[in-house]
Image 1: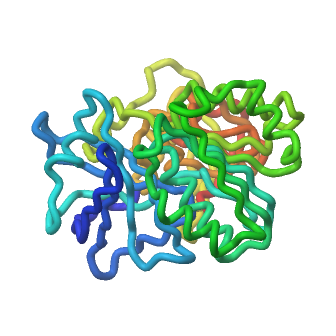
Image 2 (image 1 turned 30 degrees about the vertical axis):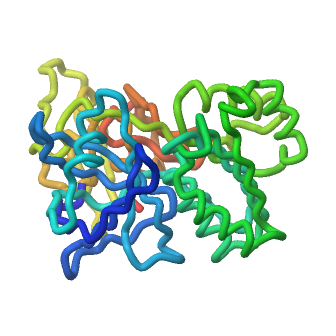
Length: 340
């Protein structure tokens, strides 16, 4: 985890009755470079106490000068309701650097984007970047309950008008078309089966879309999913360093490349990689420490590990060697990893 900093709220924009976007300004000198589709982890002083939450950036590093997130009110949501009701311009909030792997490898690919509700947030970041720096075609299917719930409706309309040859936006309104069904989505997807898909929204929506994509022959490696997860622990609290469980499970020779330095260590077989590195004073990146956010992802160049929990890395990420440091234990006598 990079060090937390205090970002300042520069603007709060009411996007719909239930959603707002927030412009955040990092302190001078802080490195907040990010990739389209990544998220910020914020520590929010809600009425229920301090809570940590991850919110995707809807701004694009290729188009926008500011950092902007969007938050939709969730029933009984402690953080989302506090943001929509109480967050004010000038407030300072603790924030971790951007993280996440929900981003295209190439913006020249043809992209098929699916968003449901507030899932438009990282999808918009990807869409704007693809149009700005890529050459591929972009198709967006955006599902909402009704027309007045469509976040960024005006921005999407302007983009579609500006890029008529490259961008096609389809609004799917439950009040008009009903819920997106697997059969209807399958018929829509068929002409775009060669595209690379990115999905973000409610779980049932993404499950239906995923089934429809697979029905059309889209391989798992071209289906990328971003799930909004509530953190069970406060990622801003200093992590409790987990010691080995006392059993003599042996060690693995570990080589770690991080921030231009190489560390060679003997890694206990019964200790997770992140816990071990932190115990050794190696400042490996992390955020949620629960296998939900990918901030701790590193590339496995040699050896094998087992991830005890993974809800974020997709098959393409795994095929490229990515593993979660917070969940990985060694299986071989030597392991080499690098943090990009």
